[in-house]
Amino acid sequence: MQNLTPAQATVIASIISGLVAVIVCVWNNRAMASKQKIAEAQRDAKLEMWMQTVDRKLDTHNGYAERFSEIKEDIAGIRASIEFLKEK
Figure 1 (tube, helix red, strand yellow):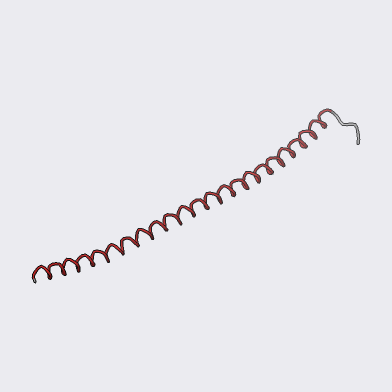
Figure 2 (cartoon, rainbow, N blue to C red; figure 1 turned 90 degrees about the vertical axis):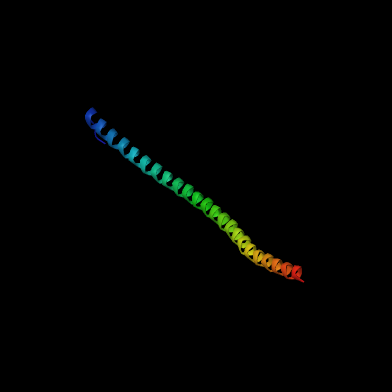
């Protein structure tokens, strides 16, 4: 290499440090994007588990509601039988 003037050396050092800064920024951005994807996947998994729990509870509740209507019909039948027996 030739002898460089101080101005040339400063320009070369600035270019090199700028390139290093750009490389570090790109690397950090990719790392942050990866972390965000992982966090988003974890949130999605938690939301999916919560939705499954809600669905399971809703199914259970719907089962009770269906059985309650059957029980209501049974009670009406029992009352009719009791009234029939009282009339005898």
